[in-house]
Image 1 (tube, rainbow, N blue to C red):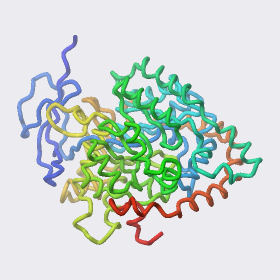
Image 2: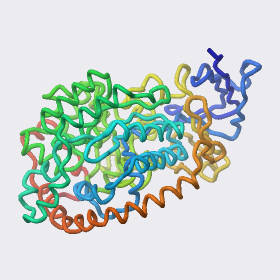
Image 3: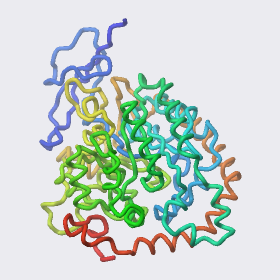
Image 4: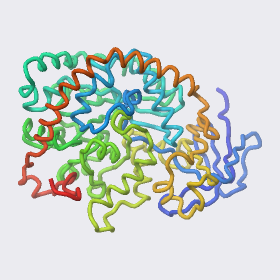
Length: 511
């Protein structure tokens, strides 16, 4: 077996997140792992490759706790979309995808993420009518080709959006009802079969890409399907990730269907535990948060998407107080339009500020940066390997350019990574000891070639998806009236007497 190559990174300033400092230090890397961080000029083996990091600020690679690779070909397609309108638009935005489209969409997102300082992601990829072993292999290969880590969790359901929202199907005129029946998803046993096939034949674990299980939204899945997902997750020792209490309409639907919150329902099935991640959690109440915290579960906080879709403001402070592990995510580019983790860190801090004037409850920049690194790493099930610049951790390192205007002057490294950096100051990115971005250039992908392929794909799909767009235009008014109406219903006050409710309760104006 070949001896692991040694690399010494000299003269950089290594961020101390909690200390709000960035002292100069050298980092010795063996193969893909940090073996020592020491004072400048520390000894290194004579054959070690030297990287000059002077005038660079080094921080752990950001980790996207919740995204959707299929969204990258759909960036910028919508405006003024609620979550429910976004789900209605799915066949128009994401329909008629070939295997190459799935690969391209994943490649675009991974390229954007690494160029903006993100080195790993929890990707809830989507394929219609169900995931396929081939599709997952193509999506995973894109991450491997870029050189980025990913936990790939195919979104699955056995109930269509129109069937999942109580009363919505009945509201549709007969003609439209017939049209949306073509959006039926596959029976759950077929989806389970495909996921099992992918899990058994997975070949990308050595390239940093693994699989997890994602029943997309609890009430879009039958009880049997949720239990089958839980069994798969246990049998193959994977994470479980689902969208919970993202919009108020979801919460109301949960009460109507189960007589409880979605979190309590999933816990009654045995799903909530240390490998369980809630996507969004805008409308979690105090009891939900306590339950998640007590069971060691995670929430991926996606403030940009939550605001763009009008879902409200998740209460990260209350989650941390309940001992919930919080990560930060961008959500998919079809509803956040970029994959910029710096932007979402800044928004996570600001969202906590507009929830009330008690500044002592506001989220600190250190808490945000830890959530976007170590917190997301734990959600991905990789908390012992990535998310920190420490001995024994993987060498996933972002090099920020201290001569970039964002860093003139450098007053406080932690505050400025969260509040000043926007991705434009990223100079280089190392993942597992290997340079993936160097001097602002992505070394693993021909970006111009990618643009040409994506444009061809866009033209072909725009033509193929014209009927789906026409159907969306007919559905928009009905869904856009019915779901906000559902969301106006009061929640069970008795439940929220015990643990106060978050989400819109902290909006500046009352609903």
